Image (tube, rainbow, N blue to C red; front, side, top):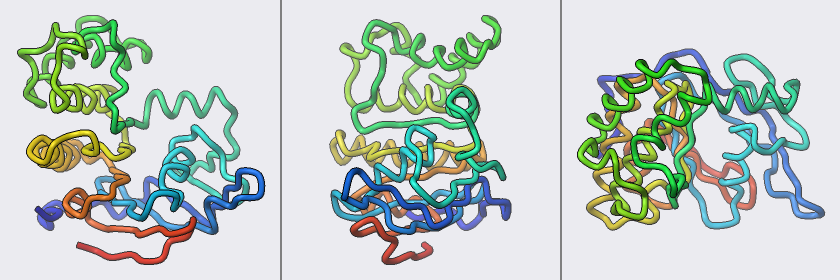
Length: 234
């Protein structure tokens, strides 16, 4: 599986990362990382454990702040934003997918997908239409009333993808989204991510150890010891 050359990403960078550095105590985790990602582009971040991938993803999502360097989201330097403004960007313009799903256990699948829209003030009727549409698209509409404990790993990740796309984000951050799935479910999730980002024009930054996962992306960045050591296009 490779990125679809028939659906090229936009020429406009949605995210520009310039010389980002981040330390925890005396340990420098990110050492001058720079790259851009355009609207509709899929970018894989690869590298061994401890290379700084997850720290970088946290900085991209505004969860953590770099010590130096800049991260510009749609032309806005995140360092210039306060906590409330960063939270607004995360809530309205960025979606996240995790290895262990992070679905709320007391909510049904439908309610988990609905939650981001509730937080953004979307009306009830519109929420219901979009929840049904998303669950249909990720092929778990028959599990809409099931709670996470009643779902398989593949079903939970499909619900998590629907939730991440519920508020129509411009950027999707995925941290090892197939890492807790068997190979068949993992392949299905990768196919779904590729199709959905093509359909929506959402940029995707995908942290992965998997070459199969990286192959759905347009580009790959390899990190080691907090630095970008290689890049390639697919």
